[in-house]
Image 1 (cartoon, rainbow, N blue to C red):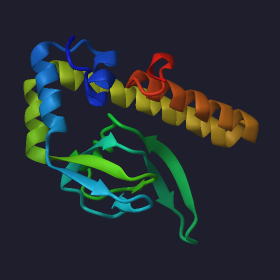
Image 2: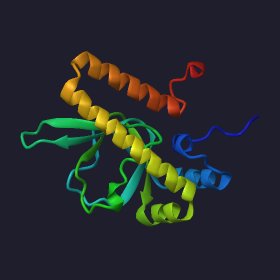
Image 3: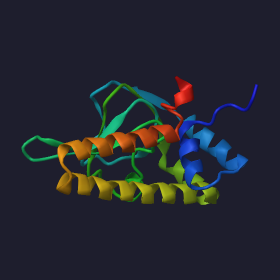
Length: 178
């Protein structure tokens, strides 16, 4: 029997920067932090909350959204297994958006101190997280183009392609997995 399959976060980070064995062990340790199950259609964090932890999606789908004054919501991102919900709790005092579960979620809760120790002690992981944030910013620019310039059919096609590539990067939905 071969090596165990890497977890989704390891797969995601390894796409951006090659991780060594110590990096992989540390990422595995992050996935072993205390986990919580969140029912579908519930908020994990709300706009205005003061977050104390970072959440890693272990299983399920979530969305990042903003709520307008009249109660309408705009989804601004999706989160799938291997995604760190948001790095902003380590910079901002309050959430500027909400994160809600679409399906039942299982999330690992990573404390500030644990995360700080990782980014100061494991430069490959830190570099991979920077790359992940840069890719995320690029995706958000595409979402702005979607909203502003693409028709509904083009927006849906773009979303399907984006989600296919994100899921494929963590080995979900591969042909040989069926």
